[in-house]
Image (cartoon, rainbow, N blue to C red; front, side, top):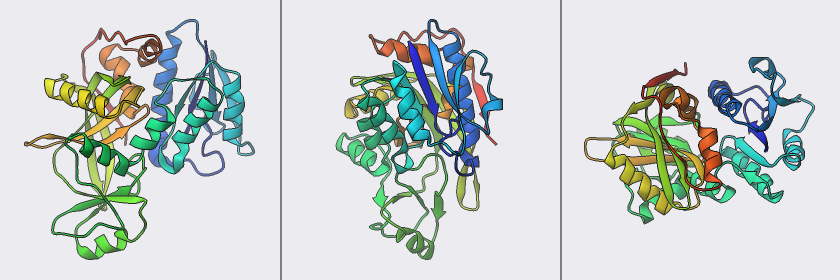
Amino acid sequence: MKILIFEYITGGGFNRQELPTGLIKEGRLMLQALLANFAELEPIELTVMLDSRLASHFDTEYLDTVIISPEQNPHEVFNRLIAECDAVWPIAPEFDGILQNLCLAVAAQAKVLLAPPAGAVALTGNKYFTYQRLIENNIATVLTQLSDQAEFTAGEWIIKPIDGAGCGDSFILTNPEDFADHAIRSAQFIIQPHLNGDKTSLSCLFKNGECWIVSVNKQGFKIIERQYQLTEIIVNSQPISENYQKLAGQIAQAFPELWGYVGIDLIETAEEIRVLEINPRLTTSFAAIQAALGLNIAQLTLQLLYGQPVIKPTINQAITLNLH
């Protein structure tokens, strides 16, 4: 099998502009981990797109690498390479329809997509659509309003892009003036109550309304000038409880479009576990799953093509990813 990997940040998606510092480290971690996964599998032939500024950061000896220079159009290169491969694994931000369009390009050439399909990305990549689907299925979540329709009441609020990845352009609002200034920006932002609680995530595999939790992870943040900054992730921070299993099953039933690796962000209070976001792609937590549990996510994803994944951890330890 010949597989094309396009991690958008490291693969040349921003080849004509400055690399986004808030995403580059996480993109590099994910790509390195995915390459390490595939290095254990045979017979797999990998083609990997790499930004010319970052090519030296990767061991490319056993790879078919395609270096993307500023003069090239990475999307045109991506489309050409799809035709030469059997399967494609895109990893990209949801904003501006980037990930959705990459998935559509793979589907247009009828190649195997090793990630959630475009329809799932369109739904879960939009935080307001996700909120509506969660509410329809009685899954605990956080009140979400479109920013141009939200009204201020006492308390703290957080505004974030409707399709954002990471913490960029998310701000905590504490007074009516800030609320009004941000709320009128556009309907491309959402506003939610700013809740205090433990921020955890689930690394999962999905297929046809079923979900298998791979790991539970704890996220560490700090707040700088009213903005969250992700500082660390403790992968496999705690056991997979019945509550997590039940919630994951509910999400799988509510979002049957999901397939492959998906990350679910949660906020946990004394009262309940609430779903914050569903990320239809590899998440940064993935980068430490093999070290934490001895599981090869690439192998498990390929198993999904033919049946159910065989999840048998050979290690059980918490691994901390330091991101800043």
